[in-house]
Length: 420
Image 1 (cartoon, rainbow, N blue to C red):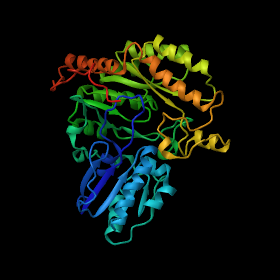
Image 2: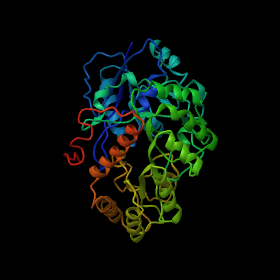
Image 3: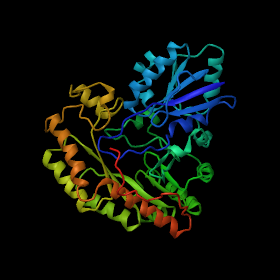
Image 4: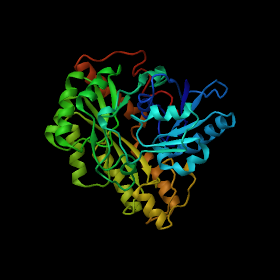
């Protein structure tokens, strides 16, 4: 059976240098498919969809809300041809009811252990309109190694530089942050994969540079330390979301190859200042994730925050505005208060103001987003800071003899043409 799995295109942040990482959801999903299924994967960000290519069944995997409307368009084209379409992925779960209007089936939840039945239903012409496993998580022990073989590997580089591969060591999140839907999607219980299975998958990845995409590694200190200890011999170099802010954990993370972290910077406190310093003291760089437009933000607060980021020598920063994605505490509160200004999902790109801020006009918050990007990158443009980030990982690789020179690796990078 030929199954075409499509990842719809989506736009980057308006000021962000454009590069593409290999998507994680589709390769994890592909690992759960029956052996008789032949997967043809298309990442529409980098490849054209041939709608005339013969196919038995189409799957559309969507991660982001801004992929939703394009995903619907793709499905409508195939369904007019009489080809059945099933949707899955994070944003399918967030927009399930609307997506059902464009689908023969939607799959909600985690796929492991469920696809044999779904494909049997398809073959026997009894495909269900909805498979709902959102609150019925499969045993974490059965999560297998992702099917990275479905990717066209040479597409995922930037100016000759190999991009990271994505990997996850756990699911679920015990936190329930205001702008985040993870509690709805994966549950509030932290579910770590068996460490030996994580290490087995890491060993199988033919790329020394990784992005560990877990919502937060700082959820179970003993598990986190055990994972890092087992990772040390692999000599991988990786980035992740936050690491536990304790000296022993940070030391083990550095030994295990921590390259940089994505760290939310939400205020100008000494706690944040010292947290960034501790990362730096362990040789771990920091990309700040900066969310503007919270109810405690005034114009002066936002400008003060940008000055603070420069003062603490943050290595990179990504600025977004609060975006009330469905099934988040932010959506529930702002919708109830009638402060959401747009329900056009194409506007939910995290760089467009779609709600009424508490202390300013929406237009002012939009101006401040541009001010943040322009001010932070004024003296050292984003490509230069990214050059330093890659220079840092190359130094780490050379130190432990894992550096594999690539044609054009870093050459012409820093001052090359910026795509955006």
